[in-house]
Length: 262
Ligand code: PGA
Image 1 (tube, rainbow, N blue to C red):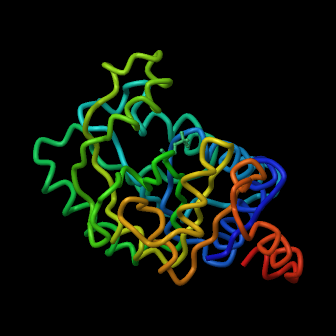
Image 2: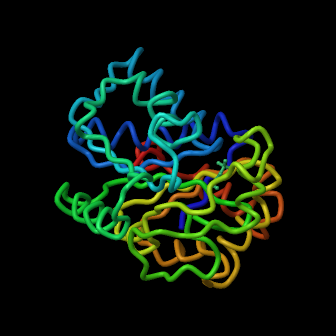
């Protein structure tokens, strides 16, 4: 695992965006796994800036989002379709037929999950998967005790996730869907690189357990300790409980510039 600690989420997001930009520049038909939530917003803003000001070209890029709520129409203001088109896709030159987001209204959910996995593998697998982290350590919607071998499937959100996400539904927990379709942990682990973002004090406990604790399905993100290329971009607040924070800073500061963006 590579731990990159920056002063604030903006700086951490710019550093993570550079890694994605380098990937897309070197391989224009890259396959990106994308995430929703508050966390990736500054990174998406930076990618939009790079597209507008530096000509970063997404026209050949294929994307797969991590998850979607079950029971929300694509047009629902809180669907992840709406989120992605509003916060990234609508602002860059991505081709709509290369965008994949699980269909939360699928009549046959298991079949939809199988075809999602098939589409990922037919696209050649995911080059970089972007991840947030839940306050309970979830990645995607793989809640605590999710199998490390899991693939795209239906999951039930925990009460904590429902409480955390109620802020997007006017604070009304009863409006938050109870189920979602999410890539599995096995799907995420198949990505050639994982970039996890975590910001703020509210994520420090989950991140400390992920980085310095034992690998356990009670902290789903901890499986990234087993990933061959996992980069965690976090801010000072999120890093505040890490035992080896100074060591991670020292490692990153000593890297040559090319390696920081690789
Ligand atoms: P957040 O959610 O970015 O809105 O904090 C992250 C997650 O639940 O994975």
